[in-house]
Structures are given as structure tokens and as C-alpha cells.
Length: 231
Image 1 (cartoon, rainbow, N blue to C red):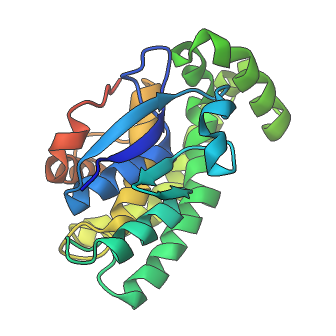
Image 2 (cartoon, rainbow, N blue to C red):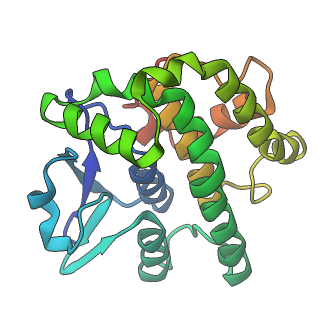
């Protein structure tokens, strides 16, 4: 079988891989036990992935197939490699995971982003910094230096946002029950993003989220070992 290739967002140091969407795919590949070649990619290298028909990562190349978007990739992996450990236990689990995916994109990631955004800038390749600052300030309507000034407020908002996850993970090992699934990978990706990009802690020792994160880390230690966490 030809090696799967994954275009994966990298910082100035190409070993720093911080995209939450790419981490979903990396965790999904590890869950399936599929070997992968990762290709470091930067925000301004749109030409490098032009073959995918769009300008965002992750982009997965599997033989002659090109798939972009982490959700589409997860569905492709489970459908194509159905004999390997499942990301979705069944169609009902896939449908419920779609909710977790959308909730993470629209609620969890924005809550985390407000806290960590200015800390991402120093990690970026020089050619990406001006683009990143200008595009994010335009998209989110807040100057970069204002994020740290509002950080206490953003942390309080994040704590409220995390309450549903804490409640679930206080009574069961994983979001899907007794075994990790793609729902866990999606939520986990937001916290990997945070821990790589910023020293600001989102939980303390003993928090159900901390216990779950360590459990997930152990389950996917082979891919997690290369993560460069700041806390």
C-alpha cells in the first residue's frame, strides 16, 4: 500500500504542528493504525496545495484520492479502511459525532482561540506572520494586543464553555463511552492546539478534563510523543 500523505500546518520550526484540524486527522490515522508521511505546510503556501482545489489544511492524499477537510477525511478513513479500528462505532455514533464536530468548531475552538491567539504569532514562520495578524484581526474584529488585555474575561467564558465536557468526562472515560472515538479526537484537538501554542492553563490537576487528556495521550502516545506542549 502506498504511504498516505498529509499536508499539515507547521510553524517556523517545522516540528511544531499546531492546527487543531490537522490534529484531528493525525489522531484519526493513529486510531486506525495507518502509517502517514506528514508534509509541513505554511499559511502562505497556497500554491503547494492548489491541487486540492482549495487553500486549507489538512489535505490527505491516499493513492489517487485527494481529500480535504478533517470531517470528510475522518469519514473517508472509516469507509475506506472499515476493517481497521472504527472511528465511529455505527451510523448513529457518526451522526452524534457530527454534533460534537460542529460544537467544537462553533463553540469550543472560538473559546480557546480567544485565549491563545496572540501566543500563536511568535511560533509562525516569518513569511506567515503579517498574513496571520492581518487576516485574524479582520476576521474577528479585535487587534492582536487586545486579546491579552481581555484574557481573564476569555478564561471565564472558556470555563463556562467547558462545563458540558467536564460533566460527561466526570462520569465516563471517553465522550463515546468506554473507548476513544473520533468525538474524543475532535475535542482533544482543541486542547492540543492550546497546549502547543500558549502557556495559559485551561485546567488544574484533578480536573476531569486533565484526567481524560492524559488517558487520550496514552492511547495515542506514538503520535502524541512529538507534540511540543507549553503546559
